[in-house]
Length: 98
Ligand SMILES: [Zn+2]
Image (cartoon, rainbow, N blue to C red):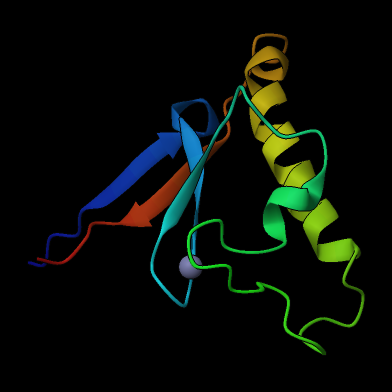
């Protein structure tokens, strides 16, 4: 018999979203309760200066950052919403392999 282990977490378990630079590996932490007012923090790496939006990388360069900001705002607001309804949104992950 095979045993499968998964990790289950709720959106309220998420403390922050990390943005990791593909060039230098630096990570910027965006705490759920401290979402920047605009998407300027998505422009480039604060450590190495790499432009995170190379020309032609996205058909509408203003749309994707807005999606990320909306995601962060939803994460922030979900705690209030979940107090008003009778279900909890859970996320399921595969257990990390060693
Ligand atoms: Zn970088």
